[in-house]
Image (cartoon, rainbow, N blue to C red; front, side):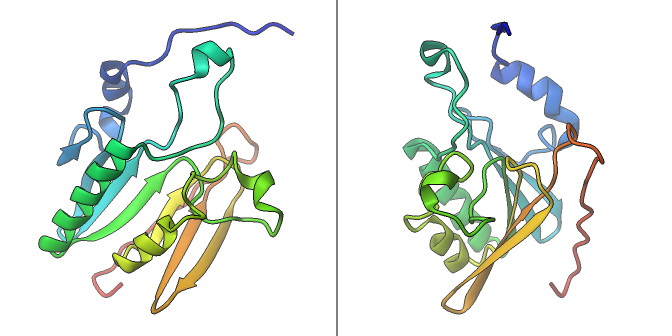
Length: 178
C-alpha cells in the first residue's frame, strides 16, 4: 500500500545498462532522449525510439503511461529516415508504445497505450517512408496489428512482458529478399 520513490535512470546509467543490447554499437544517437540507431545488417537499421514521457512524473507523483515523440525528437527521427533513404537502408522501428491499435475499442481507452500522434498521421508517414514493421510492447500481449496506407502496409508487432508468465519472446529473421 506504499509507494517508494526511487531515482530515475540517467542517460549514462541507461547507456551502461543497455550497452550490450545495441546501444554500444549504435551509429546514431539522440542525445536528448534515449533514442538510437543500430545497424543490424548491411542494409537494415533498427531505429529505437524512446516514446516514454518523463517530464511530469515527479510533480504528478506517478509515472505517466502514455507515449509521444517530442518535437526535437521528431526532427532527429526525420533526419535518420532521410539518411537511411540516402544510404538505401531499410528501417525497422522499435518503441515501447504501440503505433497501431491492437483492439477494436474507442480510441479514448487506447490513449495511454499508443504513442500520441498515432491517429494524426504518424503511421501514414512511416508507411510512406517504406517502414513496414514497428516492434512495440506496453500492452504486454503477443499480437500483430496491421493497416494499409495506399500502396504500403504497416505492422505493429507487440511482445508480451517478461513480467508475465509464460515468458513470451519473438525471434525475427531477416532475409535479403524481404
